Amino acid sequence: MSKEPLKNYESWSKEELIRRISELERSSPLPIPNGKSLTNKSKRPFDFSRFNKRFIALRFSYLGWNYNGLAIQKEPTPLPTIEQVLIDAMFKCKLIPSKNPSDFKFSRCGRTDKGVSAMNQVVALEVRSNLTVGEQQLKGNDAKELDYINILNSILPSDIKIHTICLRPPKDFDARFSCTSRYYKYIFSKKGLDIELMRQGASNYLGEHDFRNFCKIDGSKQITNYNRSIYRAEISQINDEMYCFELQGSAFLWHQVRNMISILFLIGQKLESPEIIKELTNIDKYPTRPVFEMGNDLPLILYDCKFENDEIEWIKPENNSKNEKTLSSIYANWLEFSLKQQIGKFMFEFFVNDEFNDDINSRRTRVNLGDGKGRIVNDYQPLNKRERLESFEIVNERWLKKPKKKNK
Image (cartoon, rainbow, N blue to C red; front, side):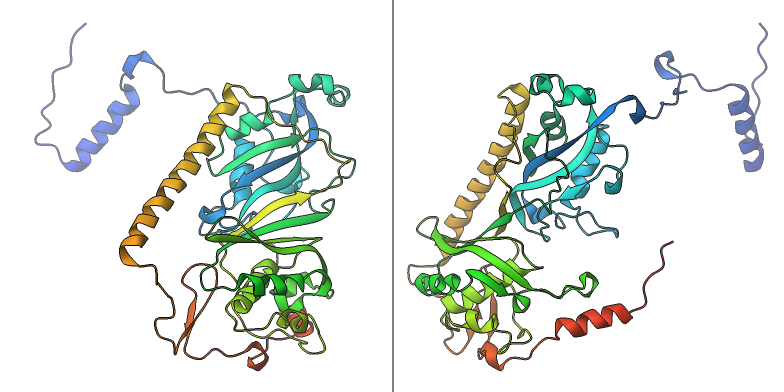
């Protein structure tokens, strides 16, 4: 086979060289390493119509400080949301047909804000199943079903993990509306606080009250009834330094828990009386909310979501090698935080002594917000002398009159 003489390209212009390279690429493709073709067979889209579906409920835990809250958002967020990560994992595993919650009957129990954690959050949704509709109703077939917990935990990050599942929720079950109560914990340091006064104040939350002065009013929700029932409100001790505000109720308003602990901090600092809670829930005396800051997000935990005992059968994963990987991941998380806590304590001890006091300058007050920093004010102004926010009627009416964005 005769070889074509080599061309002298030194005298060629840039345009001529480019044209020649294009000709060579079209006529003789470059050899592929290992002889493998780069032409990929187009993957067939996953056909969900070939599989049955089933409605399930999941209970899971998450550490909230790396996330932009629980609920998936329409607009981009600075940090991912818990649901965004969870739904991405489900979609990757081909458990759901799309990332649109309305396509798989999705519901959540207790919505949490940016930075807030949860130990027993609940979601319900429809997922792909290995079993027929008839087989799904028999417990004896559960072992043949997809291992939903371990499948998802193998993909989810170490700070979001599923721990139990209900394969047969009651008919018309909704994670939000079927929930009978939600149980929160707010952890705080006792430093500078009178715990007994806080306990007196917490007891005033018990029962049904109007909590409009303990929430952020959202005009888009058009809420007119701010009555909520509190079943449990107490201060418990965790160890010598740390305490916990335990709160259980039927349902909660936006930022309600963080505003409730904020008022308890004012009581614990003796800046307000325990009776202020009775006054703030008296709408005749406080028809609108005085301006005050809510507690920090980090110490707040949605600890549990309660349902009727006979409604749901929760199943834990078996102790197998797959579950051990999840447990190892959770333990590694705990150990890392424990080590950092101890190292931080060593550093703290180098800078302070036993007589450490925030009130270095007695003419100024550091208002406790649960984050260790608080807010320093020269002169504390009692709540009854502060500026008031607008009523919910005004906020609701303004929202109704506001021009609405048209859906594209």
